[in-house]
Length: 171
Image (cartoon, rainbow, N blue to C red; front, side):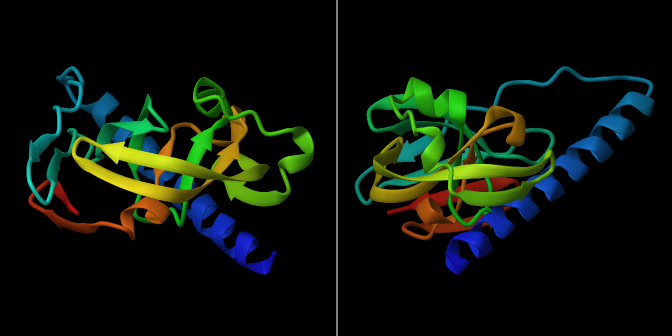
């Protein structure tokens, strides 16, 4: 139980940090004379064999990627500060994951306050040619999490490097 609380503390801290950075970015972009439109994140560049995926950051510096979770596609923001994958409850439902209220046993501090999370195990998480099996995750109420986070429970099972606005994943 103590380990779960520690993990959730890391997730919460990452959410708070991301929220603060977004607020700063929003304030600075609103004060500028010209506002560029936000372009969708480019598709990952994939090379086989040995599978390498290169993600390009968006103009905010975030890595947004479509991830196939147990056969269904969900959008995530890569978050090296999150200990585990954090799924919004609505996204989990689209994946067929419906934890009962009694399964929300872990407390999490997020940018939106304290919330409860349900630990789950994802059978398969894929980004382009990279596949990781048996990945720990938390399902969190939508009001407690603004976006799905691809955390270290996935990233620790692949080799990754960050350079010049690119995140390179290798398996």
